[in-house]
Length: 207
Length: 207
Image (cartoon, rainbow over all chains, first blue to last red; front, side, top):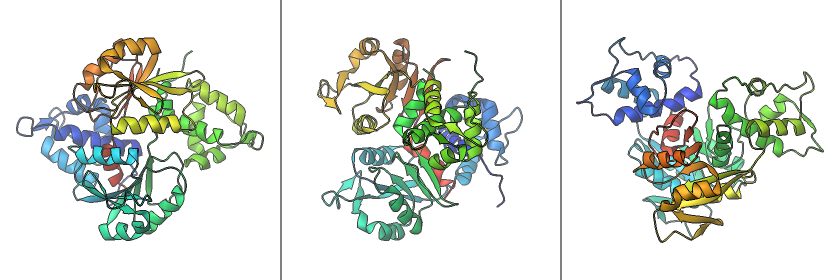
């Protein structure tokens, strides 16, 4: 499928639209306008229309979008129409909070955290929110065995690049990175870094 | 000071540039090029030049930027040239991890988390990484007393809007939101929402 290169900021907004639509009862609200969607997620209707137009999704002028159809389209575009296996490295405070947060979220499917990895022997074999903790020595084997395609990085900064390289060699295609370090990845692999200190620093601009 | 409206994505990149520059020893590296900065943060040199040009910061063609001067400029632009008091609501797993993560970060200054708030009487009076936990009943009073201008939201989703309204009325100007809900805030107040499930969902697109 040939597709225009879509800006990352657009891709990051699509799950918000999907979530808003999933909160609606399709029997009560079969059709929404771009204004409705914009109000639900806190953006402008022009933004919504522009974002969706990247994928050739257009509402009928003066009518809007069919909720059911738009949800299906968004899931297809985001590839959320199949189960995705996710791993997490680092069973500390942050890692445990992330696993619990995600598994508890109403929207967590089809993304399933299937394995947590840590170097601490005392944690290996235990569970966080029903997800088993494995030893880092089993990383490569478990990625292949469980078909893990995304990895969350939530461990102290030492040796991250080597771990990332190992994950990529085993088939991981995307990383959600909570480690305060820049990572080098080849073309075709995506890293999104989430760093509370950086987020706070950028927010100060608005105070 | 009159300033062009700067896209939020640009503001979010500036702290990454600042962090990269702070990792350099100004005695060994007095001058950097946009290529150097781009390589350190994993972006393109054109992006770096464009982002900085929003603020009238230009390197000398063929020479680059003076590290010391550029750091000072970035701090001034981001308003990181003064201490900022931050509060956090929700002393659960996620809240505790965020406080520890931020306070441990080399770059945490000048942003200081000065108070954690929770409704659990058993937690009140205790500390997370030297930050005291106060009762939610003291929220308004403590925001004023400690001069808190930013608030991190890390508690379950019920009643968030009411809490946010209370914070705004007490003088909070920016929120880093980890609660999976859309918030309504008046003009002049900024909310940045961080949601691991949404981030994972947007990453699937790249797998």
